[in-house]
Length: 328
Image (cartoon, rainbow, N blue to C red):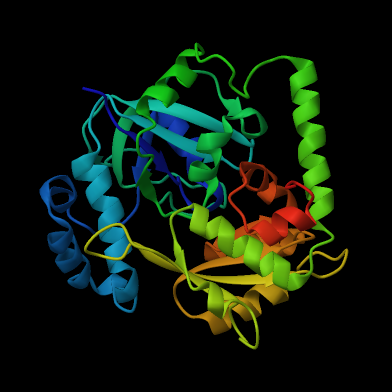
């Protein structure tokens, strides 16, 4: 029987990746949640546990999403399953095999992450890397969107175990990780062309493109309520994977001509959008200060080049395909 494949986020912006790689683990946070609840508890039990912890008061709307991630990590993931994560600092993907049962971290308790803060990894599993790191630009496109798209902390990559296993073994023919320099050069030029064409889209086009991007990740978006006169968000995307809604995302899209979004733009959005998952799309990118603020606040950022693979997948509105000249 085939195993399962999972994706994990090792801290905001990958800040806990060095610690995890040092110890050969992957893990999630929620320091005060009892290990027994993670390993053997139901989602309902995990929510009750979260409700009983004073440190988490005020975050009740996140409990369903948190419980889902904890339940998947502790109860649904098994030894032999594959776990992927993206390292933003090095712009590569790691494929690991889970080789241990979930445990509560009791080692290197004084460790600091890349921002010199406490390492927020507590419920963890031993893993082994199945192959060398794969540059994200070379990673197989059909999986890339599911790995980089707006998800959560620990989520399943459905029906992809065998394909990811083959990628790890290096025996899958035709993968984008091929070393052929001409293929790589052609791919890069095509993505650059697509990114350049997206600059011709107006702000409402970009709102539709961003909504299509979320819909391709499995979210429900009311396409009749995008942009317009909304003062805070351009649309809301709802991910629902069962009895408990996984998450709601509020999205802001900005197209400042040839100007990146700065820290104040993102702070204004965060202050007004409420306590939920936030995504900020800026066609012309972000300043370093904006990226640092977004990383600290766990706000998901996307810019024009991040949409090139999605656009080439063809899962966007026909009107946009025509404007981008990728449809007859």
